[in-house]
Each structure stands twice: as structure tokens, then as C-alpha cells.
Length: 86
Image 1 (tube, rainbow, N blue to C red):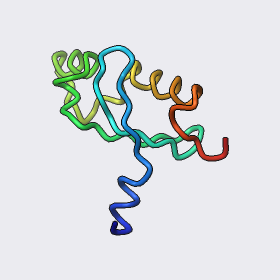
Image 2: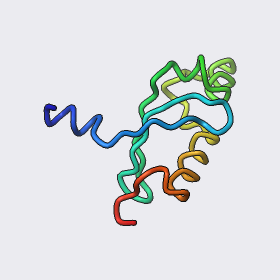
Image 3: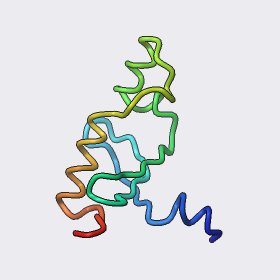
Image 4: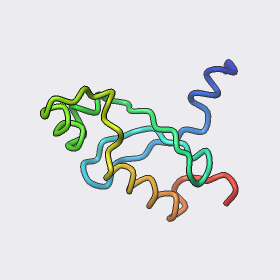
């Protein structure tokens, strides 16, 4: 794997949102820093993104899905995601 590809994709784990089941790839780089790669168009699969886009916000400008954020934090606490330093 190229160095760039490893940087972008290395250590990513699949995770489904506890609310809607949307699947993303996630990597906890530290307790405070998380990388997320959407595997689908979030506005088409995530209710929070869909609501923001329906209200006129461009999908790329939506800060985050707070339910997905909570799912990631729960998964880290429960040991489903590796957190460096833990």
C-alpha cells in the first residue's frame, strides 16, 4: 500500500450508526481525534445530513452527524474501536 493510501485508509474500521445503520469507516487517531470516511452519500443515508441538506445546507458544510459521533464515542468506550494510548 502506498504511503498516501496507508495514511488515508490505514486502520479504518467499519462501523454502523446506532440510529440509522449508515455504515462508515472510522479510525480513532487519539482520544480526541477521529477520522471518518463515508461509504455512501451521507445526505442519502443519514437522517441528520438529509435534514440539513433539505434545509439548504450543502452536504460538505454539515459539521457532523451527532448521532454518528455518539456511536463512535460509544464504540471506543466499549472497545469496538482501538484508541491509541488506551
